[in-house]
Image 1: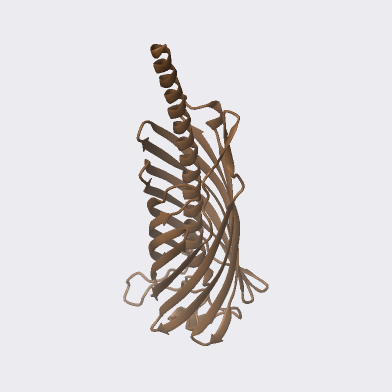
Image 2: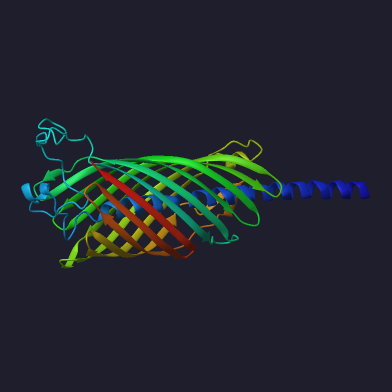
Length: 355
């Protein structure tokens, strides 16, 4: 009888541990999906902020702008198109009289670092640390009757960690996408679609796992340039988008119910940016955003039992940027803060070369 009770207890304990492992796995899947949703916000907001201020109160004065004055719509902030010219009188190379325009307008590099404590419902707070490197190529502006539009192709690499007292995850991935910017009168409309993956290696107290999340996302925002004077503008902005995330686990010991989970996140983010031309082509920006994330999946089913998955609620993001423009380069540095269900810091460096 004692042996029977002992083996019964072992079986029950084993079943309990298996269920706990599955619960941890289900929870980690939700954490991985939430991480992608917050990274998607960071990636797209960087794209929009880099391109959302399309004009300068005081365009850079160069021989080109004197010969070809700005059109009736506001001058794009990152330089003007190359002009045709001749070889210099001393025989050195000057602007050629042929078709020498570069096929793209500019190329830019960006590095972001996020350091957040994420509070998920019904789950211990975990630390999220990520670095995001992005490169982009922007085509020349195409004029419209009331403004202009252009395209940007971009791609990037993600490296980071997510950990708390129960799990420790290492994450690596990448993404590609396309961005369109349209300026018409004082309205600026940015839209992007992208896709990416995040490979995660997870260590628990009792098990380890590796899986890959892939995502497809679409995001758009619209801003209005409220010009208060020649050096100061306010930009009210609204952003909306959706990110679909699909998991593929490579650990066959889990229940079939845990294979190939999908998640969906909606985002709506109102924001306000204040841009000041400080002088000598230096610009300062103050901004505040309120990020509202909602996931379409609230539960995961394990062996016909529903388990509530952790979710992240709304949070606030605010920051300050300083930017310097030259004839061929633009440099921008940003530092920001998250408060709410995400609490922490974000840093951003951007350099752009104008052809």
